[in-house]
Image (cartoon, rainbow, N blue to C red):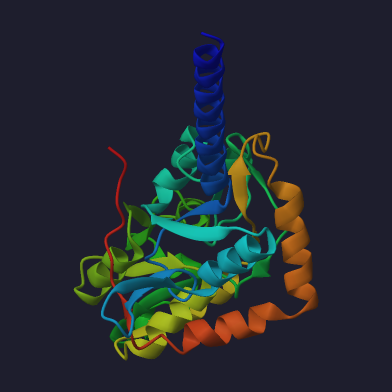
Length: 274
């Protein structure tokens, strides 16, 4: 009887240890992954391209920043693609750990998220127009009565509404759709960040940056977003990684790597949450 009880206790102990071990492994697996939300339609900051093995991969300045932060935190980066205006709601729900998507800080976004120290400041915002019409857009006043597209949920849409007096704002979810609408004459202009405008102007001879862009003002820095209150305690490590990244001048290599892919980045459709 004693032997039976001893054997039973030993079996229970082994089962208990196995259960604890399984729980620990699950936690470690979760803790070792940093999930980054982005909108991969915004080259050179975030985009998709076909790798050497034929599979689609994420690339761009922001993806490199996310990879650098993850590595410095001892984590593996996982990138999730979503339309820009859904990124912060998904972050609030807990679908992501962080959002890196050429995102500037404003009062509305601060209601649902906290932000890291700045990691990059782009060229000033710019207005893209068709080259054949460029002479018609010397000042912002020239856009009165014109259709001007900007990405939904962005500060660029605010620019159209606040600075292009008399223009008809056309909110669109994807920058690739905005460009197609411009090329096909469905809108008269689009407003995007400076580097994005430059990229499209360099790869499409039918598009140019309007002279009126100089009136839009300075660029605002990009930051990493975490859920309000930083419930996962990520900000200290993120800021430490950003400081180290700046000390090592890593952004230069990230920009060069993104530029090297400008001939192969793909137009993608970001997924919307159900």
